[in-house]
Image (cartoon, rainbow over all chains, first blue to last red; front, side, top):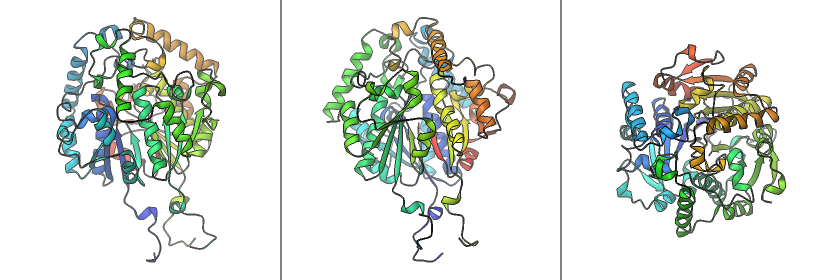
Length: 163
Length: 163
Length: 163
């Protein structure tokens, strides 16, 4: 192609943007795994953590994510049992054991792996304000804090997955 | 480029489509804020309300959206406390106060702002039928009611975010 | 256009990828209906089932999907009532009746229709491992089982909707 021509969309590297908005163990995985798989096949990946998804990158919370035992009929646990104190912790530890059997990294490990693989991890400014979080509360793998307008600028041309 | 050539993707204005499918206070915000931020950086924005997201544009409900105090471990409220009548209303009013402190518009205000900014707001035909809603139940900012096929036609070329 | 030129993005058929990650009745519909509507307007459609969304294509579960009566304030059911054993089954059967009145196909019917319409249905390898599912547990309409890297390869160029 001639030099004067603007670069066509085919020439830009493929890019995916994952928005992690949930803080449950079961919904942390799909986003992190999709981002990691994208990197493994050579696709640029950016992960934007917002709302409850801030838990995934908050030092004090990231290794304590839980599955909800109520409000999710797919768990197969009746609400009156799911409501018993300790049930969520129990179900979460069971799910973690399943993940280990499958040799899946833990959530904190996945965040580290993502960073090492070249994925760019960002936190949402508004969510930080809302939950009164500072950069010190977050893992060092977070490259920057973005507001929603900066988010759109960085997300240009990407396939977006809102988890 | 020559006139006969079809317009390339580079020449089309950038467009985002937000699908709002949830009716909770916490999940109403991410979609509305992303749409608003898109408009602020000059990106075309369309918002499609469906399923529980209809609450966001239903006159009688939009100012009464609540956060779930059960089924979301990120709230940090044990289920047996979250189940107490009134807890969801209490948590919702607390979140609204946080939002006000951050000078964030309320949900009804955000819908108005979006419309004024040039975002196009649409309601889902099937959801209207399912919840027996009429156009009079919805805010006047809704430009039209679309079925799923019309949705895809309008969403062509857009980055899609399903909230 | 000349033969030497690489095919431009305008020449590729439009494609959508729906990721179904939830197993509730209310969240099964949006993904299946969007995929079906895409096919009806001639757009290529692929549906990837993962996590709780595996229930939608699991023979023993697909006709028993339930709505959550707790954890979703949009349902308008107080948690202490939504927790009563049988409430989720009751609400689910009410929603199914509404769907029938609207002449909407059931979830198993929608899966069949999608397959017949040419949509490609895939299951997630990791979710199968996690929930200990075999191909025999899944409906025959599932074309293949993909890992997350294969998912990205197949999703190239598509508009992605994560439900």
